[in-house]
Image 1 (cartoon, helix red, strand yellow):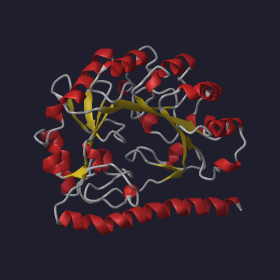
Image 2: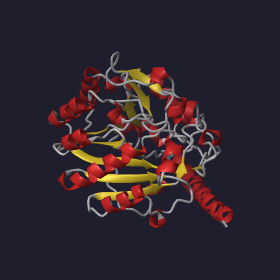
Image 3: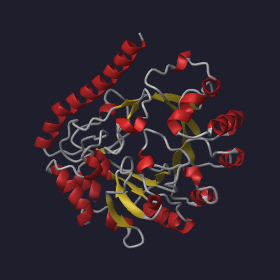
Image 4: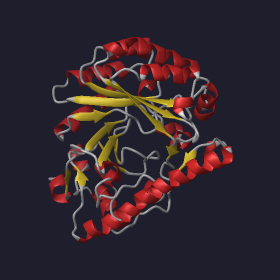
Length: 360
């Protein structure tokens, strides 16, 4: 019975990927014919305060990064990044790292958030955390913030056993205790909480009575809490494979042969790394292959310009359907020549423009 159930879940996941690719196969040729790219405007800016993580999740590319890539951003470099974003019209900043946790910056994170709070030009910021390092002192500090828009809590596994196997750590009790502290203080938060539970393919939240899931159910009763579940994991630009999953019942989409035609929309969202490098795709370039400049050498305006040959090459190559680096095997591709599939049928405030408008 369990075999057929898992097969159904796996088939459903693959079907979703098939439907997404089919939608793009139909719409992209039309938009490309009329030369009408749809780039989200304004673009998104992210700052990687920390590329260090205290987890080593089986589905994450962090396990393949090198010690040289794992770094905490200095306060000086953080201020430089914030000022460059402001000069480029950025008012919202995402602080979620590619493969780290924001609170791994144990000594400097509070000063950096305080700096954002002081900057009039910054209207809001947000981040994701694995919850293990957000202790009571940091929770009390976050209660004093006014510009923090939302905090995403990533919960790995649905009980202690699955947590330990997925994260490859023994930090379950810390996560549980920190969630208890969050529950005690939740009515004092000015920001929203988004709890994402990431577990096995056959996990059912409504049937789970483990202590941590019962705690999450009680937290989710608050009106400022959003709860979602992730059962489909990406291949991180081809760096994560089934061999990394240690035989756990996890769905890896791994859609290497998925439909790709024209530039990916993620080429127009930027992340400033902890060493001040600027990369394209603030989502899956875990190995830093898409570096297009460094803020200590050039301004952000110069770096994210179509006049920057390093940047222009990525766009030109993908206009020719040449996908290199992490883009070659990435299963999170979204064509710029179509409305995103996740916006279909939804009311959204997103605005989309062409190349000329975007770069001017």
